[in-house]
Image 1 (cartoon, helix red, strand yellow):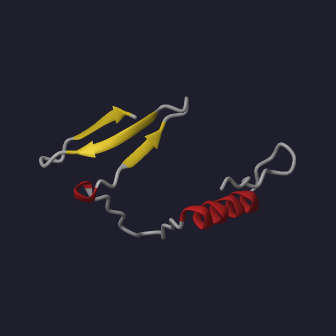
Image 2: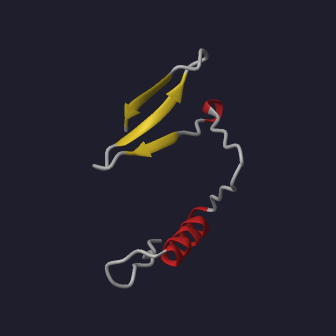
Length: 74
């Protein structure tokens, strides 16, 4: 089911708008992060971390056993 996210009033994005948007995203995804929290992504269970560049390209972030980071376009 698709839901519309809140839109800012006018051209200015305020702090209160961003907090409302973050709350909505957390509610939709069930994903929350707390300040100082460690986030672990486990490659064993097929969990992936994907980063999105400013132009919208999506990159899967990977690490090998030596700690080397690589990305693949997804």
